[in-house]
Length: 203
Picture 1 (cartoon, helix red, strand yellow):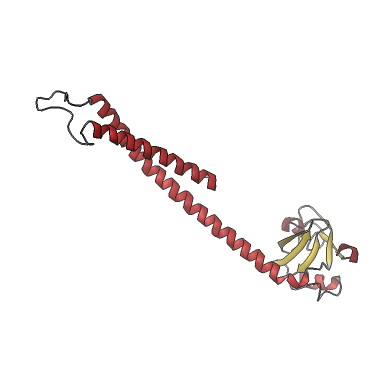
Picture 2 (picture 1 turned 45 degrees about the vertical axis):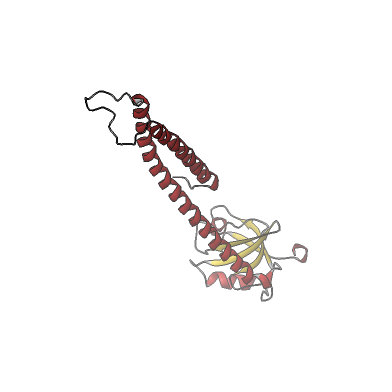
């Protein structure tokens, strides 16, 4: 089942309201005939009652039964949809909180200290979502304030084989948090990308 959207949920609620309006109208039909859902439609002699519109009442009763069943299903759909929307909202807030925390962590290092020169397709760097020209703001525990040379990056990579490294890159004036897992692959090295020192012009 596709994830419900706010518009889909509102459509379901609107459909339920239309069904409830129709149900009220049908109940008025019964009321105008002075009968309920269970009252007998034949007289004591077994003939259709002459004081009511038997066909109209039977039709209304049948439709009311169908509507009540449909309303149960519709209400369940709405409840599930609302639950899923709340779940999506919670997950979205959790993601935002994670990113916010990550950005706070990288706040001291909003100045890039390295950049991605090239990324090989199918490599760990490619799978992590790194792009050529990404400016690196954070690489594991490394920031611009602690970066001295590319050997600092190499040491973190060697100590993080098959483990997540948290990255934060600047891409077209947007801050992008990523996870990179250095590991052997079909190409050279553990990353499959070229990392270059960041020139002053890149900053």
